[in-house]
Length: 324
Ligand SMILES: Nc1ncnc2c1ncn2[C@@H]1O[C@H](COP(=O)(O)OP(=O)(O)OP(=O)(O)O)[C@@H](O)[C@H]1O
Image 1: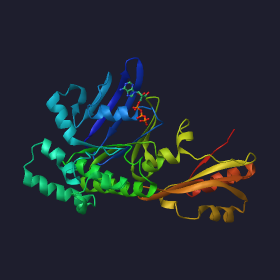
Image 2: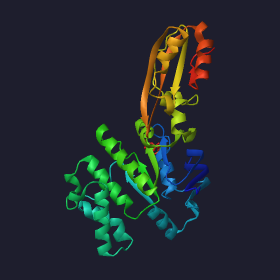
Image 3: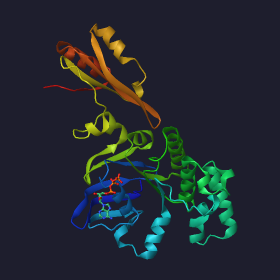
């Protein structure tokens, strides 16, 4: 499949400050790629390297087959037409109406007025705001403003949408509605999304791939589900909940991949093996279209071999949390 964005060995400095080092990833059309990490991790800088707003000193950033650093002014303009962007604070023009905001990129690219009108109508329908066309942004809620931001970002039919903390200023319910809209445009147009966020819930809900940055270095990367269900050491703090583990016996983390998420594996196991255990904690969550999760149980050390054998026989995944 075509690679739409390929980043290899990316290194970026502001003077003496190294902000990104050895960043690698590749995205295919339709990927929803989460970029997560603490404040100052380099997330926004990475995004700006993708659309040529920042230069980089090392490695390669190829977008739609073009090396971003080598683009001239015309090339950069074309690149930004192919990459829409939305922002935490929406960046709408307050003096312009909603319709005038959405039409702005079309004006810049010289689209004839009649086509512009039709396109604005279509875009405002798409984001669910056909009746707000003549309103000023100040009359809109945060969620509605972001919908206008999305309509404007899609005006030129981009291949990629860059989302910089796009839901961070919104309440949880509005966040979900914006994420649903982003998934809708992703599926409908095969749009690739790059989603910078510090909200793990956003990643779980819409991203199929994720990279975790810390101090400008990739700490973990891969498919969202496997990264969350079984994170590498060092990432656990960032993606897992803390539980007060029971100090005696064995704490076992059972992972529920999609096929068995809803089955009551645990009660069946307890019955069949005739063992006792306590539930320490757990979570079932929605990841895109699946319900996945884990459960942490505490059992007697001597029961572990039989439990592991049972889990293995039944095709389950588990992790012993404190095997010495
Ligand atoms: N224009 C700049 N000049 C100098 N240093 C900068 C500049 N922009 C960012 N930095 C520094 O680069 C580092 C990474 O910043 P960046 O904004 O990419 O992080 P971030 O992960 O997006 O953080 P946040 O979530 O707080 O936005 C920080 O240490 C920041 O202070």
